Image 1 (cartoon, rainbow, N blue to C red):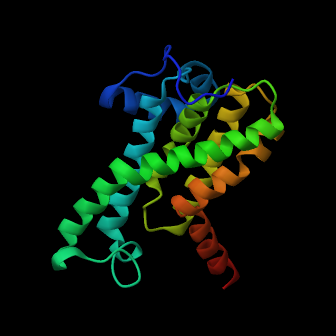
Image 2 (cartoon, rainbow, N blue to C red):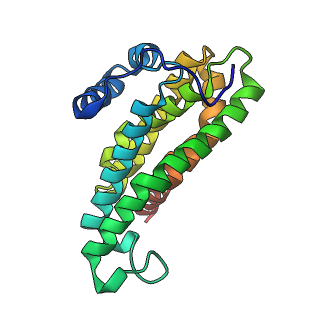
Amino acid sequence: MTTWVETPRGGRDRGPTGLVRAWGEVLRRPRRFFANGVAPGDQAPGLSFAIVVALIYVGGLLAVQPERLLGEGRIPIMADSLGLTAVFVLLLLAVVVAPAALHLVSAIQTVILMLLVDDRAGVSETVQIIGYATAPCVFAWVPIPGVAALCGLYATGLLIVGLAVVHRTTSLRAAVAGMLPAILVFGVGFGAIRAGQAVAAGVVG
């Protein structure tokens, strides 16, 4: 069944402790985590998780590589203040950009799953899978291209595991279904493609 609104049952603990516990569990035991920690209609913890990861990533970029986001041709600096601009960017990210992006990609993922998987779980579970799969990307801001590339690969692996477990399908189908969302979220959103290109250029050069 595919619905956007369901009655929550089970799901993850709320609050900072729940977020930290979920982060550790999904990185160390993803199959068990997705089997036990994703519940119908319980989007809130997964959405909050993804927002926090996005804030850490963008906050890290603003701290060590602000030129990636701010300046000419990018986000304009407000009132000649990097601090004020950073606060505005993070606020906009938390309230609008991250939630909207997560739900948009989840909708795309749902359409792909409809084409590939007959007996699938609901949309709320898909939102949670993508949200929790971002876990490695808390390190993607580190100014070493290989780190961001590895984060993207690890996150893609988590997405595939989550899709296979929650939607009860094969790893191959999950990999095919998750390819486009992984490119959009981890490759573009968290910069893994850019980082991978930098690594490849360094190897070739």
